Length: 224
Image 1 (cartoon, one colour):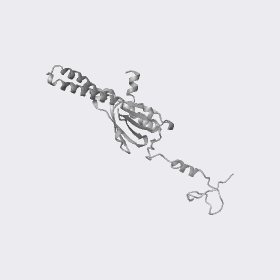
Image 2: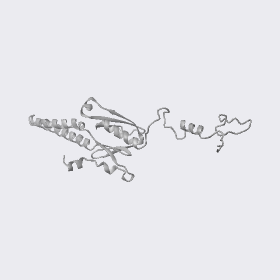
Image 3: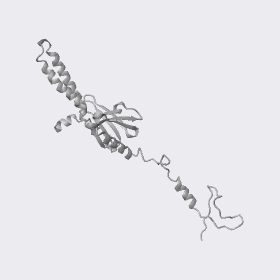
Image 4: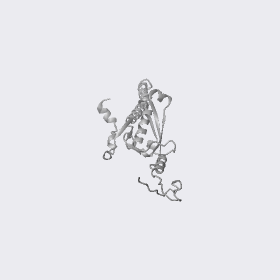
C-alpha cells in the first residue's frame, strides 16, 4: 500500500491529542489482519457470482449481478471500517477512533480503568490476536470491548505500565495491606524509646526509671 493510500485510510489520531497538556501517543493499535479475513473472502466470492450472471437465462441475469455488486460493496465497506479503526494509548488516557463517513471518538481517562480482561480464542493464539474487555468506573460502550488486537499481552502490559507511571497504582505493603505512613510503625517507636536519656537524679523519690512516664511526658537530658 502506497503512502498516499495509507494517508487516506489513516484517521490521523494526532489531531485528537491534548498537545498543550503534554499528551503523547504511547501506542497506536490498528486492527489485526484477521479482522478483514471474512470480508476479503466474501469479496472474492462476489467474482464467481458475477460470472454466474452470464450463464443464467437472460430474464434473470440481473439477479446474480446485483447480488455480486452488493456483496462486493459490503465487503469493501467492512474492510475500510477495519482500516479506519484505531485504539490509542497515551500517557493520560485511552481512546478509540472509528467510523468512515461519521466518525466516533470514545475516550476514557486512565484513572477510570478498573480492570482489563484479555480474551484469546484458539485461532487468536495461533495467529497472535485477542480481544480487550474493559471494566471502568463509567462503562463506555465505545471502549467496552476492543476486538482483534494484535499482540494483546504486550498491549495489556503497556497499559499497566502507563497506569503505574501515572501514579494511579503503587506497591502495597505486604504485612499491613496498605502503604505505611511516615512517622508511624516500628521506626517511630524506636525513636521515642531512644530519644531521651534517663536522669540520675537524687532523692528518695527519684528511682531513675522511665517506664512510669506518660506518653506526653518529657525527660530532661543531663549533660555531663
